[in-house]
Every structure is written in C-alpha cells, then in structure tokens.
Length: 502
Image (tube, rainbow, N blue to C red; front, side, top):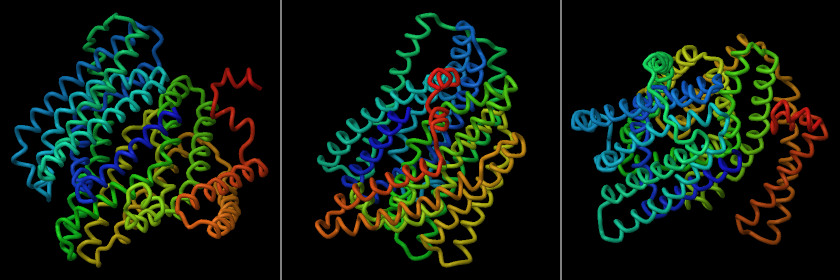
C-alpha cells in the first residue's frame, strides 16, 4: 500500500507540475476553485455508504452475504448519484453565479459533473476491498486512474490549447480526462472483485439498505461539513484578496499557488500515513466489535506513533527546502514561503488521518460530526474576522488554516484518550524525536555546506543533504530505542505472522 500510495502521490504531483507549466498558476487556480464544490456533490451522492460497506464486510464471513452487501450498496449509490447529477444540472443556473467568482470555471464544472456517477458507483467496490483488508487493490486502481488522467489530461489540454481555444474551453480537457480515469480505475476494481467472488451476483436486501442509509447519514453529514468548509473557503479567500487590492486573475493565481502547490506538497507525507489509515478503520472496527480492548489500544498506539515519527522529519525537510521543492516541481518559487509556513503546523494535519480512521472504526461518527461542525464554524468565523477586521494577508490566512487543524486534532485526541484509555509514552514518542531531529538537522546543514563548495545546483544539494538528515534521524531513533524490532514487526505484519517471525 505504501508503494502504490507513493506512486499515486508522485504521479499526482507530476500531473500538477505539468499542468502549471501548461496553463499557469491561474489555470491551476481555476481547477482548485472548482474542486471543493465537486467534492460536496460527491459526498451527497455517496450518502456515506462506502465506509458502511467496509464495516459490514469486515464483520462478515459468508461470501453470499458479502455479495449481498456489495449489491445493495451499489444500487443505493447508483440511484443516489444519478439523482444528484440530475439536480446539479437542473439548478446550475441558480447556484453557479453564487459559488463561482470566475465565470471560466463553469464549462469545466459542467463537464466534470457526470464523473460523480462513476466515482459513486465504483466506491462500493472500494468499500469491499477495504472491508476485506485487501487495500493494495485500491492502491493499484489509483495507479491506473492516475496513469489515464495524466495521458488523457495532458494530451487533451495541449490539443485544445494548440488549436487556439480559450482557457475556459482548454480546462474541459481536465474534466474529460477525470471521467476516463475514474472509468479505468473502476473497471480495474470490478475485474479484481469478480476474480475473488466469481460471477455470482448478490441480491438487493431492503433491510440492509435501510441499515446502510441509517448508518451512513451521520457519516454524510460529517463529510458534508468537511467539504462545505473548503467550498466556502474557495469563495471567501479570492473575494477577500480582491477586497484588499488584488485583481481577479491575481486572486485566482494565488489560490492556485496556495491550494494547488503549497498544500499539495504539504500532503506528500500522506503517501505513507494514508497507507496506514486505509486498513486501520476495519481493523479497529473488528477489534472493538469483539471487545479486544488491548489489541485495539495497541493498534491505536502504534498508528499514532508511526504517523508522528514519519511526518516530523518530512515536515522539517519541507520547511527547509520549500523554495527549492516548489521551484523544481512546479516552477513556482513564489509558493515556497507559503509551504514553509504550512510545514510549521503540518503535523496536526497528518495526525488527523489515524485519529479519524480510529474514531470511525469505533463507530463514533456522531461525535466526529460534532467536532467537525464546531471547528468548521470556528475556522470560517476566523476567516471572516481576518477579512473584515485586519489587513488580510497570506500569513494571516495560513495562521487561521493551521489554527483550525490544531484545534480539531486536540479535541479528537483528548476524546479518543477518554473513551479508549490508550497510552503513548509522551517523552519517548513526542519529545525525543524532536531532539533527535535537531541533531539530524545540524548534520544536514553541515552536509549542505560541504556540497555547496562544489556545486550550486539545487537538486544536487537537496538530495544528498536530505538523505543525510533521514539517515542520522533513523540511526538515532534506533540508538535511543524509540523504534525497535517489536515496533517494526507490529507495523509490517499481522499478529499471527509476528509470532512466527519472533
């Protein structure tokens, strides 16, 4: 899963890197303005069914019942997504002007809407593989999706651009490529599903359908809040920038650099942490359902420790080499200061991943909903306050952005500790790695200074210096016994396989 996640993330970054060179920061900004509203419709269409499918399958042993669960979920998802698409088209003239500050987004958004049916329909299969803990299939399907997206997207955009079409029309190529990509990834999952379950088709179970919908509603509401916040953000930030003196193209370009470049690079550690989170929810659900509190708490402790130990060094590297990374990947050195500021509080963003997966696995969807709602209101209120009562700037925006994530992390962490009683050694896991990172950072600076004597090439300086930092960091973690053989075995292998290897 780590390998496929890494491949998908690198492909995604490369796709954005090519896009920004073809359509510029302004074009990338237009795609980012559209994404939150598309995700909002997608959440409504999914109705919270995929994670419910995952949880139901994780507790099921009979293959016939598993097929029934998949069939029931698929029917609900297809019906709901078709209804959402129909409503989105009918009411488009009424909501388009309110949510899109730039008219050039509209054709691209209209072309993207049909993709909702594909994503929702095939998400039942993602729930199946997650529930069966065969998450590598999901990762491979994402590789297929990204491959098609890159080939079709770059090809169509270049074709439309070279034929003299305006940017609004060129971006339709972006939407069409997404449709083909989701088709390819979904068909890949369908083929793998049939290899496991054969040609047998499950039956639609009305009782199961009601259970799925009833359980999925709290998930949907919480995800609506999650997607509603970035959607409102996509309206507030460009308008705030325009009110404080920026032109519409400048505001759009800044949003592209902020979300499309800085935040995109910041999410690189999710390559590894996401590989942990995907199978975490069904594993926690199974342990919690069987009242195996000790095993559940051990999974919680290792997942939080793993996430922290992985993201700390990566965020330090992102902070130090922000300008270089943005220049090499996106030819956008101006996004470097934004990335540096984001990296200072990025740990709260990544620690959210396992926390969310754990609480969902323990069926605490309603409580998550409350936390998302409260922090979402706080974040949007802070954005409005910064707009109307201060001199709105990128620094203030990033401060508010990180403040929201830190509050959400603290609330979820304390609540999980209260209901589970898990214990993570504070000094060993949270403080000692920071001290170790300081020594690794000094070693990196010394290496960097030596390399700069013979070369001023950014890439030649970055790679060996970063490798030195990571090498010293891992060696010191082993020397101070922050990680050991038991820790590594718990991460890599199931309980039975750990016993055999020990």
